[in-house]
Length: 289
Image (cartoon, rainbow, N blue to C red; front, side):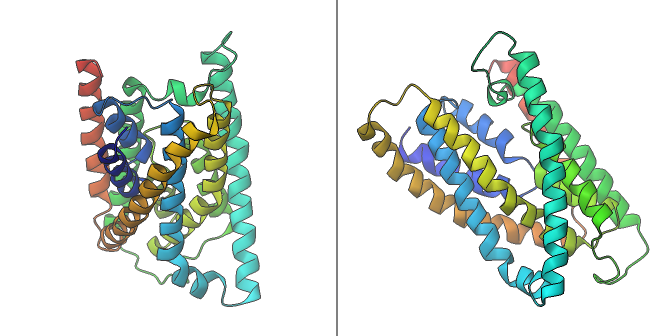
């Protein structure tokens, strides 16, 4: 893996992690096209750092909005904390058992089988992308046909809506290709949450979820048997830091793009892209990737 590979993966991750088009699907495809091994420890370390870079992009981009919405008073913060905890708990209660069930079913008899090994196959990524695309399209069409135009305050988030969004996020966790942000923002729109509120809450959930994802990837790195000795590990750290910086910059661009299309009534275009990407991934699988 050279610097060119790292820059390509960082840009792909930074853009697609925060756009509703599934970063994991695009990164897996990019890795396969570049001839890289997604399960290698250096690649795992790079993925950890890329996730970290995009998490900081989310914090920087949304911080002023979160401060004005959720941190302007103790009452607002308490409400926000309850909704985030509720949604995150439901994400874990739904997502983690599904992951373990799939691992125990698909890797029966294999002591170290992990769901990442299963869902790196393009044959499984394609239908997940298509499902995300259909959900985004439905939400976009629903939003465009809605005649009600109420304020953000009137469409503020309640506990039931937050719980449903968290549950949908849990369904996204096991399946590479099923965009987390696409599913959660679309769900919020279908629940008649204001678009800006659905967007900011979705990415607040992402900031809460990302450390757990990073920790899981880090544990995979620790368990890997391919890296022996600190020198080899150290040689992979610096390139990964470079990747994190570029993922951060690409993430800021992606968030501006997403907000512009979401507020401009063009959310459905992301759904069309996901359907096109699903067809492309299926074709790559047919070619033998």
